Image (tube, rainbow, N blue to C red; front, side, top):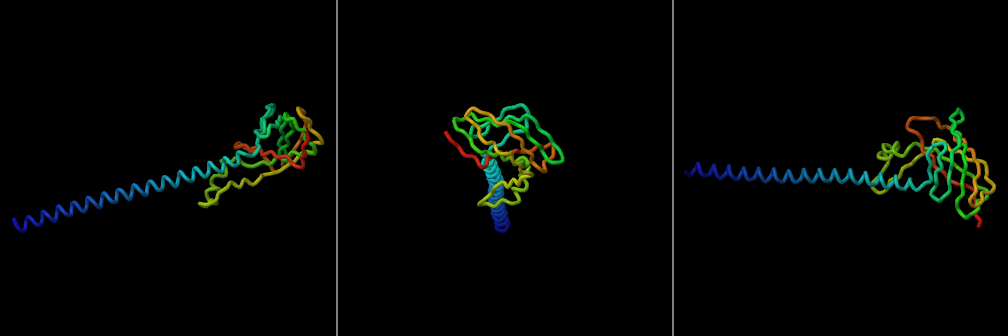
Length: 184
């Protein structure tokens, strides 16, 4: 039993060592998989946060005949859309439901791709500390000055945004006012 018994002990020790090594390797593999999943989820959260910050901008859809409300309460009603060699011409009505008179307001419209179309560029340019969606405008246009928009009033406008072509993906229109003054 002398020599044969030692071999069994070594074999049992080796089996235990191999078992422990496999167990530790499994724990390490599980940890690496969890880290990879967490990194992916963090990237998804950063993207969602950046999209939410862009959603704070006033935007509207290119739908003729539908009254759309901007974040501050003003409304835009598109009467006509026309794509041409000059770009996209939007004819519409600006509504003021607030108890504030707007003076010397110009409507500025910026056309960009939809936010989801920036995802690959965003992933390439992002860093762990800071990320943002740089939605470079395809074109920017502005209306002529609306001299006065009374509370409850409406005013027609027309804006041509250059470089805009009709696409199956559509475009995102960001609205801002420039030069305006307010009075009560």
